[in-house]
Image (tube, rainbow, N blue to C red; front, side, top):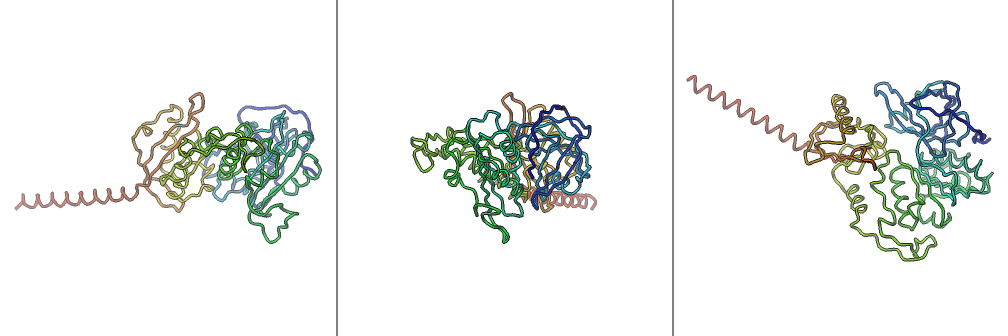
Length: 441
């Protein structure tokens, strides 16, 4: 039985928050659960564009109001939306949804949004490339292609760990089997004992640019969604292989992956007649090691200090290896979380007041050489001292859309200074006592 809703025109777009009720929960894998949502008011819902997301405002006990975006994982045109959420071990909202959002739970939802969408007039074949829970917008696109775009050639390529983490496997195979224009390939990086190649998955190992070059059309458009390392690998890897920037589309909530883009133009890559040519002619130039993009990549990956990027609301959108070294949270732990994970509870109100003022004004004295010294929290509960500077991220209109912070662990220096002050205070007290003793004798 197909999950694809029948095509029907709908209206009923809304501004602000609208209450939706969980109508159904459906486990898709051991880590991903789908939630089918129907508006409480019984009204119509707008037909989203395949690939768009919904914004949720969730009041989590003890954590306050939390805002998150989740891709719609069904084709447009029905009376409900479906989101499919991975339970993250440290995810405040994802854990709450999995543990508390039962059938009947009401959620505040913003209208469909986002520009990572399947175009209505897509002229070329498409490759829907995903890793892990990044498959959610791809399933929406794939259902739409199976139902409404029978002339569009589509290649669904998905990577996951094994059958326990594989969501929508049977559904995707069914769509491909019933559609002459759809081909699907699934990669398991570590197949389990019960996983059968040819039945549950197609290739053991990870997706590679070389495999894509051999199995998908050279003129295809690539739609990519997955964890940050997955995006970084394929956005830059496909570009370096000769795929034009306008044919590489990707989803990353927070939009700071722009900092790491390495397009053919940036690397001075001409159309290639090499092993990476994708059928084009010409010669690929070597990538200069001193482009701003190459320097930025090396800086982020090799920097011993923490480099953390957060969006305007304070949710983490980039977490470099230095941040993991200092704070103990892995990239997977931190991405999408509030900066609260490293802010001591007693300092959060003050921090967010300053953060909001800085975002609104676009000015901070800690970006012009002045360092701010503050306590911070580590994953293991330790409290450390850090110094940091910040830089604003702005859109084309100059509006602040996020901030970049570079932080250094100065705990050792702070403790030494504190010990020195203590010794000086003791010496001063001893000197005063000696002076008083002499004066009284």
